[in-house]
Image 1 (cartoon, one colour):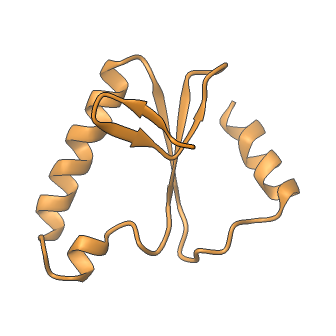
Image 2: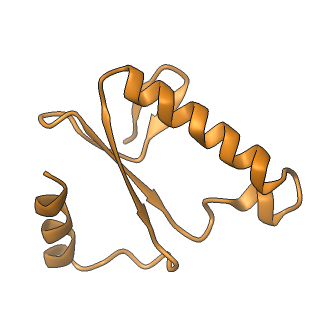
Length: 84
């Protein structure tokens, strides 16, 4: 279940650390890929979203993944420790 901040949903929210982990998989820029907006328009909306999250006191960590395959548990735990 996603955590809501204003009108935005966070991908993974570690409440005890106040950290939002954004997992950007292959579908992340889907509206650009479908020709519904430009890269610049998408980036502007992403910047507004990130600024809003930061203004609410939440740190943001963005993981850019070229695959939709989720890493194994040990890799995920290692990523979590690196983020903390």
